[in-house]
Image (cartoon, rainbow, N blue to C red; front, side, top):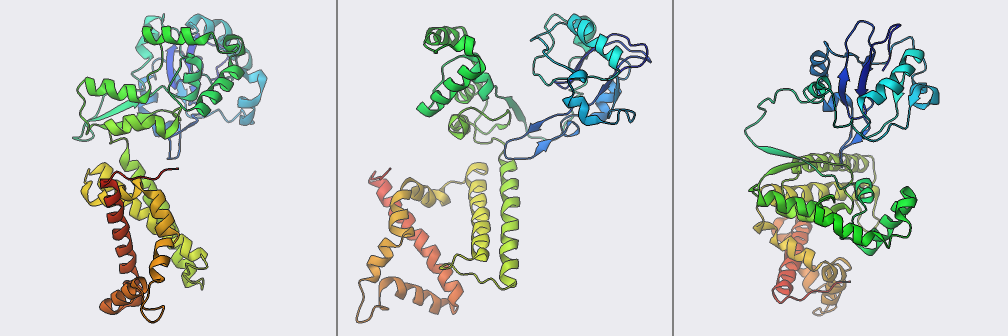
Length: 409
């Protein structure tokens, strides 16, 4: 934010991307669009313009706060604004009232003309003047427009590492996760943490009072209890969830539609360049050779695998057509056996050891040769043989699953 020669009082909380209060005037301070450092999981980083309607933001607040799109040209060294101690307002108290900004921020703007607030996540205190309350939300949330016939839900999970650590509540997790959280708490809040032994009774009391962040699984139970169906399309607005995918598993199981189309798009776009790269390398003279694991072979197989798994994901998790993929599910439940016997060629090698008259007359090589003869093509015959192998191991895994026979590490 920056001001003119005569500065009127203004309170702006740009770190939460909302202008909380302001007093208009020609010489009043101007708010500059904040720098938003926000990266969606598995996608790309976002800018302020990607999140909010910029034109609406400026137009709605034009009578209360003057907003400019960038720092003025007369301020040459823009990097200084975010690195210089002289131009940064730091140590903003949690839930600071409006008077704090008037007493501490306003004089610095008056003196130095342009200042930056150090990034922080604490909003203004709840005790706000009427004008502050009127400006706290509408500039960010314009009138809702009907975009589609499908109902969706935006779920803000507050289960990041920082929130879990600050709460000093106990959560389900592995020994490694609990040990890492203990080290994190000891580093960030050493006076409060001490050795951690006194926190157990406090954590239990917080749970009883409902003062602990809800785990994703608990959120899922509450949503289902409120009547939301399993097919509800949910977009998770959150940072990196503590516990990763294991922690998100209960929520995904109860609400499978968690931004699936974003994953389909991302995985497809990741697989396509691999296929193109492999084909270009093949044209340039690098052969497709599995025994040599050439670069062209690895690129094409990786890209094809990505497309194949994306199709399976779309069919099973998005369209909920699971029966055709049951074979792959059985294989996944007996992955160790299939890897040892199939991928490592132990079982095919054993079958090839049983031959009639000559080593070439065995069940494995004979089946592949028969398919090549039937399809009049070596390549298509080999492909059909691979598909037949997958089907065989899927049925074998299904038999083991029916007998409830599993081998795990």
